[in-house]
Length: 184
Length: 184
DNA sequence: GTCTATAATTTGATAGAC
DNA sequence: GTCTATCAAATTATAGAC
Image (cartoon, rainbow over all chains, first blue to last red; front, side, top):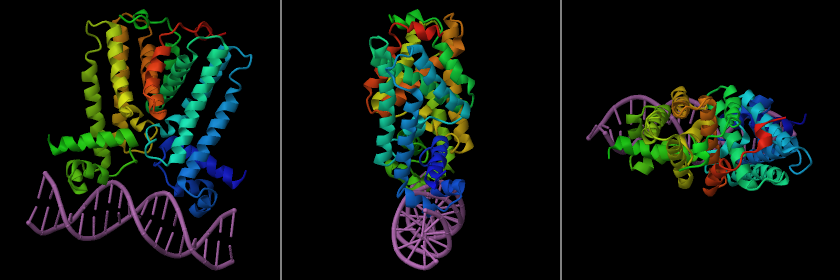
């Protein structure tokens, strides 16, 4: 595996577990077994490294999910997405999303843009999946679905209890709450 | 208003918009109009300041929501919670939750503990609200509800579009997706 | 209580040898 | 490409005068 890839891998792990400002070039250098100046050789600034990690993550995520408009069942697609997020919950890491969510105003422009691109891409994927299955209001359904997955991941991470992720998804399959769906 | 309170207010704003490591004592000092050493007088370490901000936020949130088991309708309670999170979405700030969600492993113990306490408290509030309304599986419903609100807030923040919050909540009120609720 | 001054460390980043 | 050496700036935090 190339040094470039090793750097990306190590940086991704650090970004996911500690946020943008939660680690330094030294940490990554030590992880990879090189010196900090070598990281700068591949990625001039920390923001460049972050943006590249995010772009790779977006690509990988979309590949894992597959086309949003192919002939698979909607349930199959949604379940796949659930599994993808669930895997992150078990690893105990955050998603790239929560990644820089709170720090979005405190990171370089390139990294912030890549973060937004990730959300736009995933929201679009869910939107297309719902629309191609014939559902109306596909965009709000997409926003709901993505929000639920993100939030569930957040909870399981903060509470350090992966089962919380499953619990949150279970609640979504219970009988609907009439009073909520028909507000007074 | 006391200096102590001004410090907490300024710190809370900074924590919410930039994360734990996204600002320095200098920023807060400048916000308040004092010197950094004065902050240390009230809060010896940054972790103490963070923990206090979080504890205050938890208390304030619970006060705003009111008792989870009083005789108000469930829909009324849920709507209040929705409004509370929605207000944050409009302000463009994150919730204390997303606060340190991703950084939870990179912040002092006291702050991490206070972050978890917040989630436990809010999860408990929803749980009690559902249970006292006679709903079964109140805990999974609570996890779902809190996840949805957190995730919707996250999305609206990253996409810098407060309406996304409303959109995500709307999707939850649409007709359920049969295939999802009855997985193959 | 608030300040000045400063310590001690860490940070992202650069220059240049090999 | 990877290293050594180093920089300038920023960071949390402390000591002590007033």
